[in-house]
Image (cartoon, rainbow, N blue to C red; front, side, top):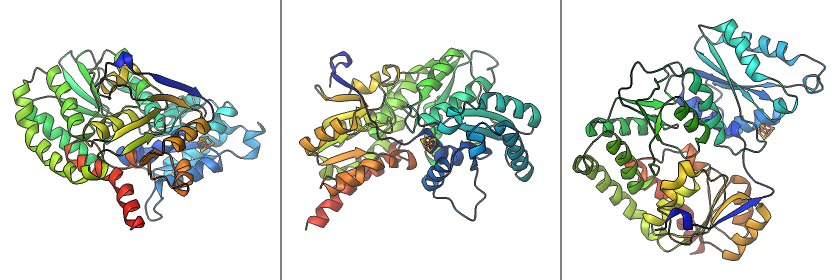
Length: 417
Ligand code: SF4
């Protein structure tokens, strides 16, 4: 373990290989079941969202793209008129929509389409039935998990003010419903509460916020949202993220401490789940122990994942890349990394690929764009996007999380036989 200040960080600025923030629509629309996401963008944007979501043709999807045509892009047509018409049609056809997000893209930003003003105008027209909000999912200088940060941040000004300063817990970051239910049970057993989750399952059921609110982040990529919640009076609890057994215990422990729950109660409530999770982890540890790991910057989950794979699975960290290093959100994780680990922030993809090739790690965690070329060169890879598409938080998922990384190593061994 190291003290945070000692960790050397290699900062790079150059060509990057990441998806854009539109990707977040895939998990956000599953979570908020009364919300619709209307991307204002190009055919490329439509293609990205559809292929990422693997659209089911029988379902009524809760996302779509209003495609900016050549006349819009050339400034020959008033894109606002067209947007008002499309939104009117959509809302007339879909009475199930209670919150509509207008999601900006690179093309809408390039032509400086003011979606903030459009959202205000459309909200005036369609309230109280539908609230219209906006955020940007543009890929200009962002990484794909920032889409969730931007979306949640757009909701913060609309959270109702808490009636008083009574302590309450706000768990922030999209969790699969099954994981949310598991955590709610554990908080109940600990006597921590009332507990609210943000985003909620229905976007119109926004949790209250005030000086009694204690914020516990479930995802490490919510920098803007966390700061906006603090600006509204909430207190941010410093904690590692609930990945793996130790991460989950520390995370629950941060809430327990804030609510005056004793260490004995924490131990009594968490021990059975932690025991089961350790048994599940033990199955995969032989695959991972002593193996060398290289993480490219992509999902912003790299540091907590590296901590889990080192601390609980015995992997050796070669390089831990992250798109951004926000010390406010990451110090509790950094303190648990081994001394001397190579951290890198940002990316110069060619230089990083050179370092990876030279190191020849046993496993490389990276985005989809890099995985296939690296596999072709004989390296084993894991797509980082799976970490946001699969439920991985909490005790019950600790074994599955380890399995995600053990699987490519297992497959490589089988192919070699
Ligand atoms: S928002 Fe930008 S990066 Fe994302 S799909 Fe559209 S054009 Fe591409």
